[in-house]
Length: 401
Image (spheres, helix red, strand yellow):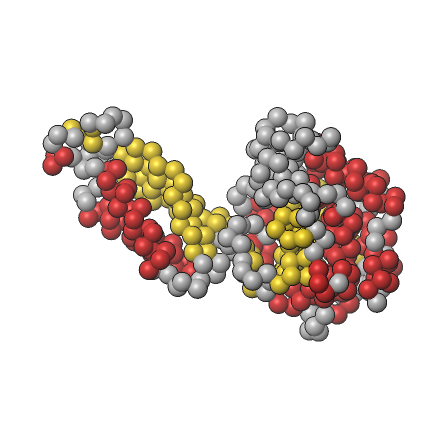
């Protein structure tokens, strides 16, 4: 069973070489969020070369609708993110970024290439399956609201998508393995800004001033207690202050302090509760010391909550292709975030990890200037995605895979 599936879905030599060429080009020509104009054009040029119908979605997105010729059926979406990061590359690869200060340091060049390979495979096999597949090349994952923006513009509609699938290359799993998890797999990511307005004065006469720096220190301590004492210890929460600005001289009481940071949770209920607790706590401290405050709390990415049925489908298909030992059930979610959570809020979805760690190579995390991966992971990703899509379409939502 395993070998026959593997042989059937393994990209041929010609396609594999094309995919390696695509990945190298994308890596050499990265573009930041919502600036992916050349990336968009390049994706469409390959679809045109292969004779695959497609459409531009928004300014820099691309959507491919594939229709099986075996008849009506389920409708699944597959998403790949296409944007890069503002990082100076230090990999010394022969195809390193040509764009100063911009790099594919999160594997999105791999994600895009894998989805293109999946599109090609499914298109070539369209006479053997029924239903629909919507392949979404999404811009702006590293920025705020890209997935949500596409949803609001109807990317899941006409006809409605019934489920969604996405992968992410993962340097913390062995090369060619797959990591799956039911429930939360990534966290929400919300940003906050606290502007404290006190009253300036001379350090020799603090009784005539309201010290914004002292108030900010009280907020820092209280936020730590909020995490350790105000939330369920088995329900992960992060509250991080990453930036504080205030004060002008050693002998002046600061009249203003700006604090900026992020909060992360893995459940929608905790996310909503934390926001209320956060705002109430900060306001209470500031008012108690006679200052005023303006709190800006921006909701970013929601957590990615995996659907059990789709997740089990990935697990089964990966095991059939790669072997049981190559499938890992992840014991805990990542507190990192991905805006694929916006899709998962709308339709049953699953997001899985594709391992790229090699025993004889140093491990560099996502967003590191030396992050890289072996291109041989691309055909493996294509196989897993293709097999999962075809299996899910065949079984339907009311049957287990």
